[in-house]
Length: 155
Image (cartoon, rainbow, N blue to C red; front, side, top):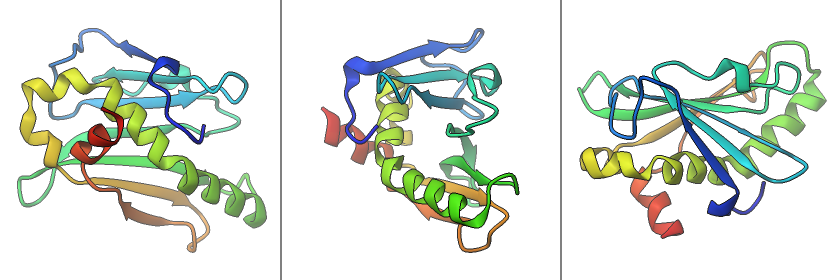
């Protein structure tokens, strides 16, 4: 992936989701093609499990939630390892996710940019990504700024 190119992003809304509904519980599934460098974003009430490569598991999923302080948060997840990858390969996967997360988040935020016209408060909500792994050194939650930061980098 490395650089975000809006022309290589395809967005699909899974009915009954639209570009403005739902807000809370809105879910994103971002996948990509290593061959064409295309990004594929699905937006809906549910994750687009059919789009996920069950063997590679290189997707980024995210959803809008409310925090304990009643603040909106975009909470995402990247699957590093559940035991099917050894520690070395899990480290490689983790480092690739870290390197490419900025591009993935640009794809999610830019791909759903019309949503923010209806919910401008979400532009300043925090983004957290959970790196899921059986290896403790890769299992962590990382703060990635706000949607506004990503839109400013693109527009």
